[in-house]
Image 1 (cartoon, rainbow over the protein chains, first blue to last red):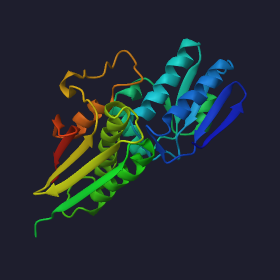
Image 2 (image 1 turned 90 degrees about the vertical axis):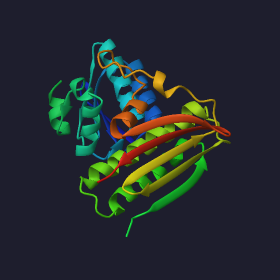
Image 3 (image 1 turned 180 degrees about the vertical axis):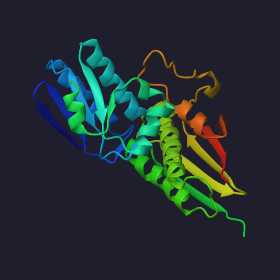
Image 4 (image 1 turned 30 degrees about the vertical axis):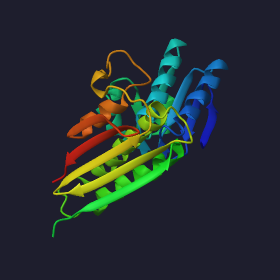
Length: 111
Length: 140
């Protein structure tokens, strides 16, 4: 899957450059985040501007990242959710779990 | 004229085909005559329930075996959309699956909950060589 990973000082920005985040590619996002945690990089922003569709596996990968970041005293925040993607977080009540920002700059500045 | 649509498709038991099947659901939502709801929302929901049901068949029922296949039959008649997803596995009891625990964060277990929330009726039953997950929704 296409991911842009950029270090922004103490925060890692992961831009998901895919239209779909689903059972086909979410495993790659999950393992990419795990390697970052192993390197001690525990503060992450996942930018979903390009993602038009997310399924329960995609949500599961983000939940996994959030849990791992929290367990290491870090955080995983989200930005750039399209309307329908945001409604998925509401349907599964995950909007109460994640900090969600409209754009990348705000998400990065929140750390 | 009564609008009647039938789509019957078989794909290999691989997640790379999820997007293709989801797209068919979106296109049906955008093509239907006389739908009074939010079409873009319906497009997302049909993409989602097809993706969830098919991923379930691939990863759980058919246990990721790439030589198996998934058969999807979509019909629309008398304003009722019916989606059947056939797997070739042992099956599971759809009624035994719990509602996700919203307090404790789990990585898995939201797929069937999503399908049940978005569709009017969901059943999972045996057929000749596996099981069929059937989902229905009335679209007005």
